[in-house]
Every structure is written in structure tokens, then in C-alpha cells.
Image 1 (cartoon, rainbow, N blue to C red):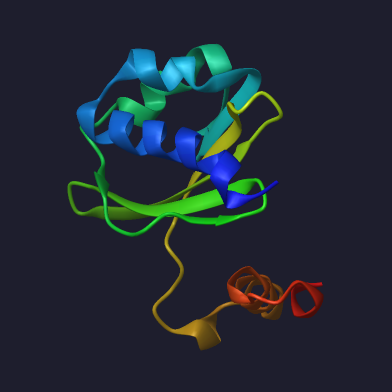
Image 2 (image 1 turned 135 degrees about the horizontal axis):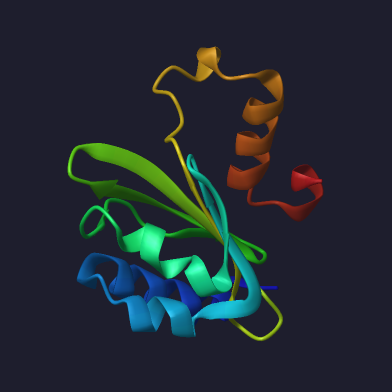
Length: 129
């Protein structure tokens, strides 16, 4: 899947999050989608509410995408997070996850995480593999 396929979904989500637009979020989640954060997992029907509870999100970075997965750094109040997701076959989100941002000191991350981060940033297909 290319970045162009992810772009409409990511654009809709990143507009809906700062606006607190629950209907738009719900409309862009696939029927079997799920959302995961530090409080646990919720299925599609319950996913928009925890994403919006606590106030609006502010988008803090460009959206990165790699095949069908995307990520964007977000902030709510003083809490920084990374919103990750995947685009399903129908162009809707198949999952969303809110994670802590990467540590500022790359040496404090595990070797597996460092390799994944390097692969994410690698532009050449063969080197990514």
C-alpha cells in the first residue's frame, strides 16, 4: 500500500482529533477496528470516545507513513504521545494506538526498537528488508 492511500484517512483523522469530532472519527474506523492506549483496548464502537476524552489533540509533527501504517506526534495539554494506525482494505482505520513518544536518548531504547526505527526511516526498499 502506498502513502497516497493512507493520506485521505490520515487527513480526516488529524482534522477530527483537534476538533473533538467524534462522528468523523467513528466514520473513519473500520467495523473491526480497535483502539489501544495505556488504559487498554476498545473496539470500533467504543474507540472514538477515549481518543477524545481529556480535551482536543494538537498535531505536533508531520505524518509519517510506511506502507499501510502511519504515525503522527500529538499533544494534549502537556502530554506528548504518538498516534499510530493502519489503513485497512476499505480505506478505513483498522487499528489506532496511542503510545509514549520515543525517548530523547536513543541509547536508552532496546536494540529491537532501534532496528525498527532505522527500518522505518530507510528509503531504499532492499535496505528496509
